[in-house]
Length: 391
Image (cartoon, helix red, strand yellow):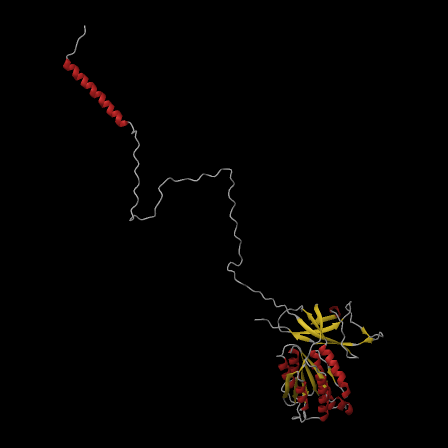
């Protein structure tokens, strides 16, 4: 038999059951995550007052990594080592000395120039040491010469010999030759400077009528002439016509010899006056003869030191041949070029000797068409001064 609850008690139990179910449902709802995503809001643009550049806040894209099998990049080239990083310019000057020797080869009998010689026919000794000749050439050029004439009131015969010799040289000149005329007694007198006008040269020679002093200061006159010619470029010649005596010079023989030795590119040809008078007197062997021999020796020394020739003509008829030999010597010559083994620029004097040799190195022998031996002379300077060091 069923029992029934009173209606009021049944309602209370139903109400309590409903409250319990509602409480459990609320707790489960708080622990569960939210199902709906939050709404995205658009970013507000920055105001003009905000500092800093505009930036992109969008998605960052990462580059794809390279494949593992791709080779690594080559290393950067090594920069070359520069020895002169500032591009500075440096210069190196090497002064290699070159010596030119003017040489003439003359037959002793005929005074003719010997042509056709080659480099292997010459032997140059510098301070006794053989040198290697680099080139040999023959040249024929106009001349630049000074006629240095002794014109003093000491002897009519000496003046006559001087005039004959000077006129003979004047007649051998060519139109391209430059000549100066200088006389000396107590002092030097320049009659005409270098000119190729033969009329001026002739007038200066014709003015030699009345001499002034009787002194013959040869050393002083030669020193001044060498000093003037040293300022002129190229090869120069001095035609010294006089007795060779010196009476009142300020310079000594040693000083004038040193000047002759140290003056480059000058060749002295000397023609002695008074040879006939000395022959007529027959020498005598006294002080006069000794004075004459000393004067001749001085003239020969001046010529030999510079590669020139010295003559002592007795008769006037010898003069044309003498000046023909001089012209043949100074217009035709060999120019020998070599580099000295002693290349020091110390200003020292180098003694030079020029010889002729055959293919085997023996002295060269010459002969005429009939097979007779011919004697010859090699005319060249006996030395030169080396350059001074460049400071």
